[in-house]
Image (tube, rainbow, N blue to C red; front, side, top):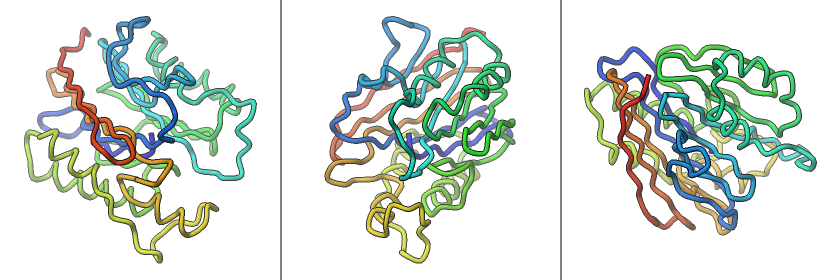
Length: 255
């Protein structure tokens, strides 16, 4: 997952509004969102190579979403799959703060990551670069491949568009949120971050929706949890920038 726009708390109708894009190599095998056969409490897509996931929710309201931290000099060999973090959190019954405290003790065994985890009433942000771990404040946030709310063009654009939409609407259309996520406009060169991947690739990675010959946005997800704990989860999948399909789920949390 490479872009997570979300609004948490302080809304009259919703506890959580999340609109996220997962970017990945097109060749990496992936299952679209569903309740897992081996863990039917979990609703998420699945990386069929590492058998983890990037974003999911459980029937009792555990929520997690993860992005990689961009570091082209990182040595990926002998590292655990970062998708296991989200999978393990969703499988666990350990209170979120306790789970993340335990995660910090072994977090260097994973490549660089950012994690949003908790439930509709309390979310935490955690990463293994600065070893930050703290509650998410109420309001609109954006997370890409740096730290939470780092002012990259794509995070600033996503955060601003989601914030404007929330201020002007009491109820939400998933289609409107997907339209935000589909923005493929590249940022101007003078606004690009320098993350060590070179100018041309920085350009290609700067939109909310990414499309390159071998890598890009594989799915977009809208997750809504209203004040009555009703969940709407919609995923749209893509291959090489082309729409493949949509799945919708609607259910009431059990707690």
